[in-house]
Length: 125
Image 1: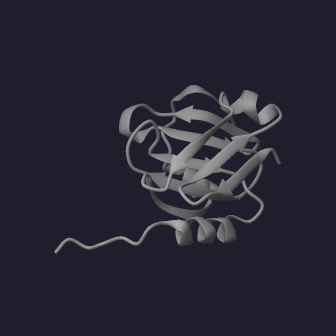
Image 2: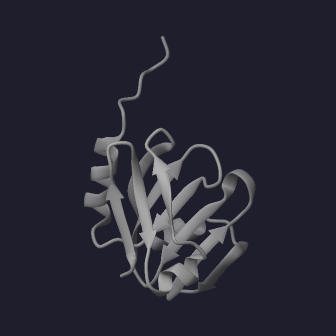
């Protein structure tokens, strides 16, 4: 697997290595914690069904590889998934992506780590 993820004090660093750089058309992405809404494990079929079909640039080979940018505007998503059936989805606010979907060894533990790093949310008074 060539996706590396690291949670820092102020953000989440997602790096694509090896051939995943080519497939994703990026070296990676830095996500400030202020932009991260939620991270959660997700079944592949649910993630794909909630994803735009148009890839710009990207590649999709059903059940084998889904990588690159999908959709335009506020629905734009970044994907780097090979054959995994359980994925990590990171929901964001702002541009350029609404959601990042990646393959990691343990999506549940990784989502817990990201969510614990998020600043506490305050309800409006």
